[in-house]
Image (cartoon, rainbow, N blue to C red):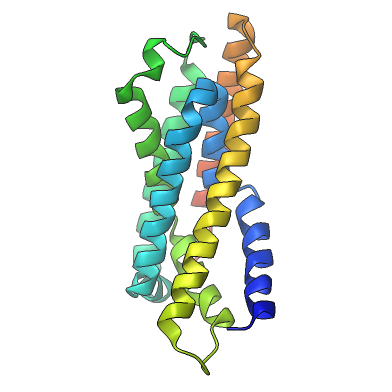
Length: 208
């Protein structure tokens, strides 16, 4: 793989990762709801979800999803329903304390945030299909394939982590400077609306 080819992949990945989608909307919504303390579990969950997507694609699940409209639609609607559920829950959430030592900063809450980010990222059938179609474009047949796949995968994961962290930091910063309960509730409603919107967007994705 040449440096130019790798730079082209990095550029394409930056555009893909920083373009708002289900994971970005989830990150923004959760960070608005829970503040800066949600950044680490959100980033970790999205990272593990991307690893699952990449691994599934390498194992051929992406190809199966590209062939089977039924399987694609099943995973799509499961992911969309989960996003909408999270959105409704966030929309109805009352204001929370932004004290970092509050109950919402507990390990249990961090695990829930991590789990939600992981599931929403991993339950993205378009992601699996995309990796199957996208990665081969940047792999040179004149060199061993596996080292190139590892380089591309690590590069993508780093860019994805950067994207999630930036969105979470910005949203968490905004939430962390809001103390009034009524304003916090507006942030909850905004975050919930983003999640419901992401669910509807996921449900409208077309196979192929």
